[in-house]
Every structure is written in C-alpha cells, then in structure tokens.
Image (cartoon, rainbow, N blue to C red; front, side, top):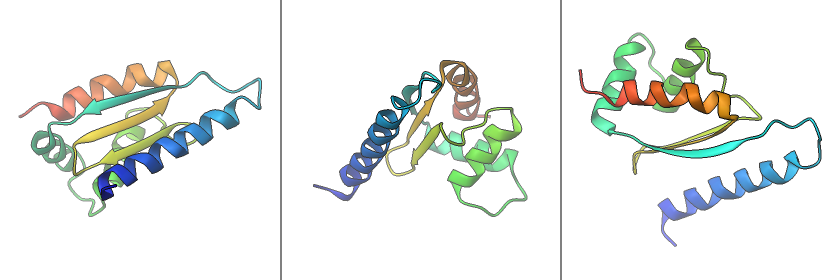
Length: 111
C-alpha cells in the first residue's frame, strides 16, 4: 500500500466512523460525500491571492476561505484536501455542498 492510498484509507475510515456515529442520534443531519477535482495551479494561486497576508497551510487557507463565504465546514462536516493528487473531499449537508461547488469552481478558474 502506498502512502497516498494509506491517506485515502484513513480519510474513508474517518468518514465511515462519522457516518456510523450519525445513526445513533435521530437529530443528525443528512450528509453527502463529494469529491472535487482541483486544477491545482489555478486553485492554489487563486486561494493565495484571496488570502494574501496569511502565511498558513493551504488547508487552513481553504477552510478560512470557505468560512468567510458563509460555508462552515466544522464538524459534523468534514473536509480533506489531498494536495498531491489535487482532490478535495467534502462531507457535508446537501445545502452546504450547493455552496461548496461554486466556490471550488471559482478557485479552479485561471485569472
């Protein structure tokens, strides 16, 4: 097993565990898992352009970027950024997923 597949396996395990826990509570929100393909050069360039004064990791910048646009990805939502493969995994309610898609599309667009 490669390092990359181990990381994805851990992410899937964490999501499965979170999904299993959500069946315990009858008030748990319905969650969806979506994968987004990133155009890495444009995505990271645009992300750093939007948050120019911050010297943080791409993951932290992304989470902050979503939050400033009204998309809260704190638990029970989950976000996983694989910079090496250019994949973004988001586990969130359908309403949040509808907000995530245009933000990812905007960051993926070359300027």
